[in-house]
Every structure is written in C-alpha cells, then in structure tokens.
Image 1 (cartoon, rainbow, N blue to C red):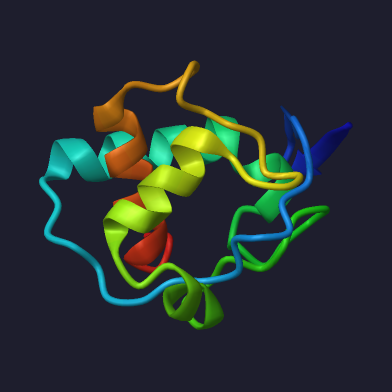
Image 2 (image 1 turned 60 degrees about the horizontal axis):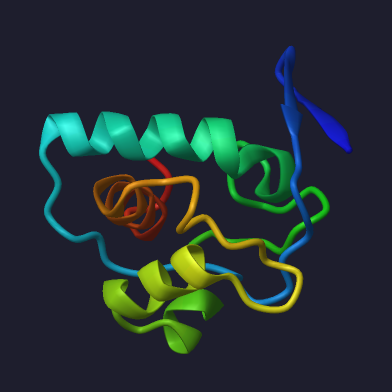
Length: 110
C-alpha cells in the first residue's frame, strides 16, 4: 500500500509489530546520518511515518523499542532478518545502510 508522506508516495512493504521506539544515539558522521535519513525515507516512512509515530507499522519513536532492543546490534539484526510482519532488509540494504538507519532511528529520527 502507498502512503502519502508530505507529497511523497512511499510503498510500505509490510507491517511491523516488533519495532516500537528508541533510545540514546550512537555517534554518527554527517555522511552516515545522511545515509540513515535517506534509507529511512525510502524504506521505512511508508509503515512508520516520517516522524516514527506509525502509519500501518508501530510507533518507533524513542521509548519502548529501546527496552526490547537495548543495543544497536539487536536492532540491526531485526532490520536485517525481519520478524513477524517486519520484512527483512538484509537482501536489500548493505550492512552500512542498516547500521546508519538504526543509528538514525535510535537518535530520535533526526
């Protein structure tokens, strides 16, 4: 399903029931921050919304997700492998892109 996010038509590959929010940001370079934001806009906005509040996927703003995925590595594994209705992105994104989008989300989406 395509969701309209500020004039952008973004396809939502599937719904996620496992990711819900984040915590402290890991250090990022300007380049990795830009990559993380770009990946988020292209791959995540359709389900999680531009601000992470959820469209058809769950709210992933800072909060509960950090309790479920306390480390960046555990969140990277979720993105890479998928779980439940969360699609896997390991075949679509590089390890660097996965790390960047996780850092972007854990950093409060901005």
